[in-house]
Length: 153
Image (cartoon, rainbow, N blue to C red; front, top):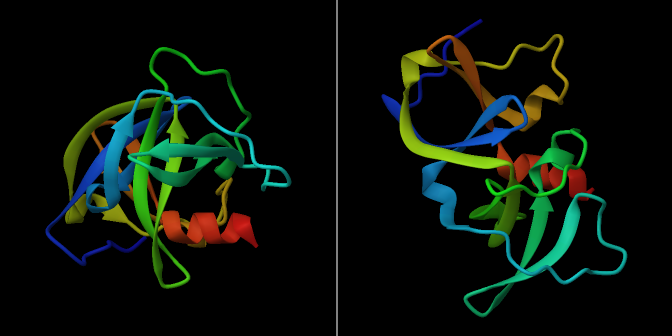
């Protein structure tokens, strides 16, 4: 497995989805919210819970569990909505992502980041930017724009 070496460190927001730890690049995070009222949208994709109001803007709300093929679970006191700005079809777009838990903003050393194994992944490898080694565990760093685009098609 080769190392991902495009920077010395990658600043990320650490998230929990069930037992898995994910990391979203901090540069795309705009806000972290407690669960907010959601307006359903008829005929929306299965991973889209509806739309939310974020500072007067209509923002689609996607369930990260569903995007990663995990079962939907009811919200808990730790559930959060992470509002990110993703580049979708060349346009910067705000998207809310429902996650089980938000841990912290931290840095992952480039030396700890590795390419995604092509065998045995539950997800399509091209939807994950890299996997980081952190302590005794792993951190999955998804490519959010590709993940959203792949499910929207």
